[in-house]
Amino acid sequence: MSTQPHEHGHHHHGHPHRPAPQPPQTPPAPPAEGPVGRIGPWTFAEYVEECRKFHSYPAPGLIVGGIMVQAARTRLPEGILFDAVAETSSCLPDAVQLLTPCTAGNGWLRVVDLSRYAVTLYNKYTGEGVRAALDAAKLEAWPEMKGWFLKLKTKQEQDSDRLREEMRLAGESVLTIEAVQVEPAYVGKTSKGPIALCPLCHEAYPRRHGGICRGCQGEAPTRPAGPATPGAGEAQAVPQLTAVPIAEAIGKTALHDMTRIEPGESKGAEFTRGQTLTAGDVCRLQAMGRMRVYLAEDNAPGEDWVHEDEAARAFAHGLTADGALQPKGPPREGKITLVATQDGLLTVDEEALERLNLVPGVMAASRHHCSVLKKGEAAASTRAIPLYLPRKDFQKACALLDAAPPLRLVPIKAPRAGLLITGTEVFTGLIQDKFEPILTAKIEAYGGSVVKTVFAPDDAALIRDGARSLLEARCDLIITTAGLSVDPDDVTRKALVDAGAEDMLYGMPVIPGAMSLIGRIGHARLMGVPACALYFRTTAFDLLLPRVLAGIPITRADLARLSRGGQCKECPTCTFPHCPFGK
Image 1 (tube, helix red, strand yellow):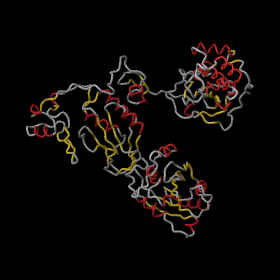
Image 2 (cartoon, helix red, strand yellow):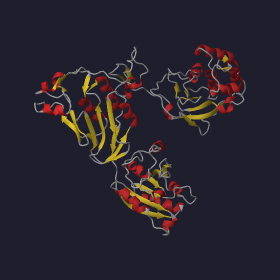
Image 3 (tube, one colour):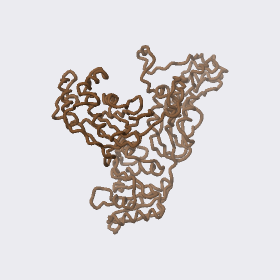
Image 4 (cartoon, helix red, strand yellow):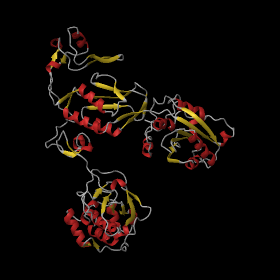
């Protein structure tokens, strides 16, 4: 098989293959279904014994896995170099390693753990292959196999001899075998790339994983030996700091900001880091309930610790990769707030932000993903929780930010919009159109303008021509109205396809606006607004419009995520966007 080892630096998630539209090559004729005589170079009984040696006992998954691997291999063209992908981490990868040169170590076997009992062998250069899956629907005639596979019997209740005999007799009859095309992400060599030494553990790792290795990012499967401290939870080490009575602090400098709170009235730093304390400050400190204070002169915890102000500056710098978000000012009470330097759409890598907040003693909070911000509005705040953060946690946080800055402020482009208002009743004047003023106001709210409006009846050819006329008017956003339901007269989507619409996504888990549409047509972005927008002030259109104007790609997965918060409360007085809708 493969003669040169190649590396796979990471696993890819999702389905590793798609059905091939036709068999890529004419494979050799598969063996006839029936009892299994041999698996690889062994008789069935010899293979069971090999499983015992390899796996410490003849695991049923390893036995049926051998039948599956052989079924796929005998259907591959002779002489090709192939790789393998197993869709479960249980037993099946061992069958691949027993019967083929593909192993996890040489990188020719990949495990994409979807917990599906299926294996694919495929041409390592083209991705054309054969997938074999154990089919539960074909197990009715094999009760012991069914009980094992569907966990209907405990291991103690299974008749191991009968189970193995059923596997031998059933052979390939319990499998679904099909030609497939493996997705490009799983085909060919993937290099680890440059290697770095982790500054925390000093072990080698692929530099693309970030400023520190994934183990030090919190994914390590081990910890130093020794019992954990009972009840300690996430308790961190603290530096040895010395506090002095306030009477001894006169003429010396404060180590940190000290906050004064007037309930219901004010909250702020009454004293700031580096401020020289005077005799007149003693009474104010006493009124704040502070009888002892930390002084800069008495406390120098050393290089293993980072002061809250330095940590906040570093975190604020790392949260965003561009200059569109800037600190509102220097740290106050250990915190920095990032504000928008221009109008725009805030995008949040929620997974990256969550990873950062998993670091002990570190916090960063942001506005919701895809919040529309005006210049000067707060986008996020960050700080270290303790006065001094352990340097190892500081380095971990900075490395995570270096690998994936979670915040970005994207400019919102003022559109040249074209409206395509459909409906025979409007086109013939039977009713007055109300869409044009509603949509015009929404477009103008983002600094755009409606450069052309076209009215069309429920006629696919005329709607198609209307869309093309808006393209000719150089509209960069085309908005169609109505004609998007399941009624037989609603022909808008077909007409848009005829006009050249591509990448259309129709329907989304948002109420109101479930039958909305987005896509592209020529050089323009495309949005379809259902009739509900005539009644409801806020719909899915209002959630999607700023994303479209910012040029943010929208996928079906993005639309699916709108389901959390996608139900409008339909308040008597609408306060959107200052409400839970779309968040």
